[in-house]
Image 1: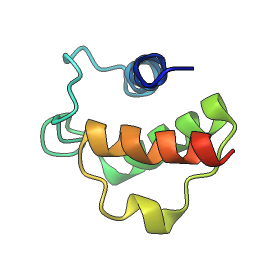
Image 2: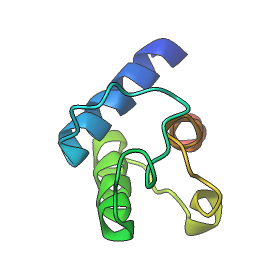
Image 3: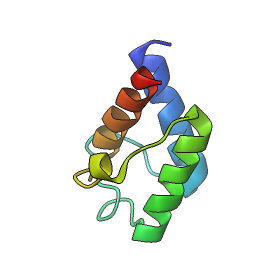
Image 4: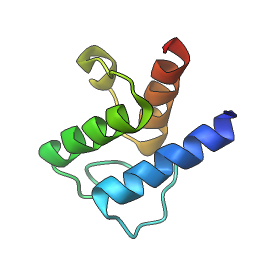
Length: 81
């Protein structure tokens, strides 16, 4: 899977999980711009873990604030898997 294909699939999961109608961009902030609560972010993380059969360690998620940062963390986990 190419990086572009992986990002497209991550975006698909984000759209499904959050039910957002916003145009997703790498610089879109998960909480302030998308309006996600901390619980919704954790549900999104769970959906991403299930979709890609990965585990996302909390230590890697602490500094994630944007869609792009989340894509990077997921991509790294997929590569490790």
